Amino acid sequence: MGLYGRASLIWLGFFILAMINGTIREFGIKRLIGEPWAHHLSALTAIVLFGAYGWLMREKLDLRSVTDAISIGVFWFILTILAETFIVGRLMGRHSWREILANYDILSGNLWPLVVLWVGILPYVIYKLRS
Image (cartoon, rainbow, N blue to C red; front, side):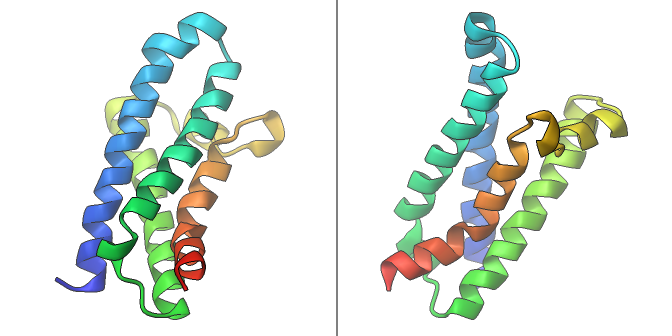
C-alpha cells in the first residue's frame, strides 16, 4: 500500500476518535460544564488524542522525507475540513453554512481551528521527532 493509502486509513482513525470525542462532549461534558467550556475542553482532548494516536501510527505511516510529511499534513488538513464541513456539519448535523463557518471563528473563542491546524502539522512533528 502506498503512502496516501496508509495515510487515508490512519486518518480514518482520527475521524473515529473525533466522533467519540464529540459524543463524549455532547452527552457528558456539556451537561457538566456547559458551553463554551465543553467545546474548549473537547478541542484540547482532541489535540492530545490525535497526537498520541499519530505517534502510535508513526511506523505504519512511514514518512521518509519532509516532503512526505508536509504533503500528508496538507492531505489530512483537507480531509478534516471536508469531513467536518460536509459529513459532520451538513449531513449529520444539518447545520447552516453560517453555523459551520462559525466553528472556524477563533476570534469568537472557537478552538476548532487549532485542532484542524494540529492535524495538518502532525505528520511534520512526527517526522521531526522520529528523525
